[in-house]
Length: 77
Image (cartoon, rainbow, N blue to C red; front, side, top):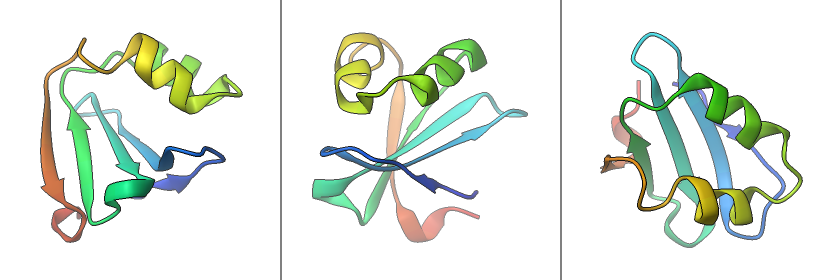
């Protein structure tokens, strides 16, 4: 999985797997880990990528609203 770096004070990089419908977020303050959001709708991912404030969108639209697992970044393939 390729994570694309983004301009944000909280989020370092974001990725999306279309087949699995998974969103991947690497935070700046815990860059050794990646949060994998499960059953994540592609339309919300597309909106996420288009907003100027990734951190604000994350807090208002993603955090606490989707199931996730936290994995070591090195486990991504």
